[in-house]
Amino acid sequence: MFFDIGPLELIALIILAVLIFGPDKLPKVIQDVAGMIRKLREFSDSAKEDIRRELGPEFKDFEFEDLNPKKFAKKHLLDNEDLGLKELTGSFDLKKEMAEVSDAARTVGDVREDGRGDTDTKSRTSLTKETPAEGKSVAPYDADAT
Image (cartoon, rainbow, N blue to C red):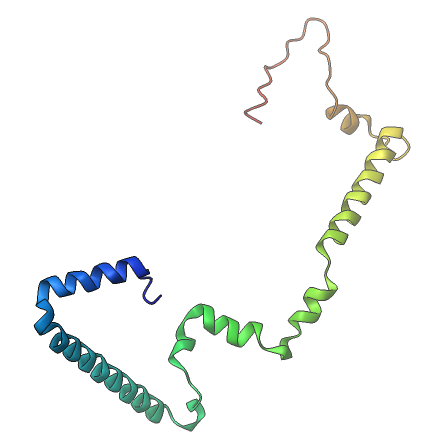
């Protein structure tokens, strides 16, 4: 409903208010609370108008809700068509770019496996598992550490 209070919590608050203040004083308490809320709204509105008047005519459309960073970014960055963000995001296809990169990597890998593209045997054998020569010991290999 409002203030994240559900219907059951609202009913519980009403019952609690009736028990605390009693049925005869409850209307007076509700009037006092409503009057206080009305005065707080008037005070808030007058303070906003004073701030707008002090800022000058260039800030006549200033809204205090814009001070929220999410709303500020949405208003000034995402809704602004002058930036051309929609054209940029529409022209950039991440799936297509990733497919091109993976195809390029696959073709380079195929060339190296055939031996036509890479003549450096040291780089090719560093990726394969080598067996140690007789009499030489190999350092232990820990797959979790690498």
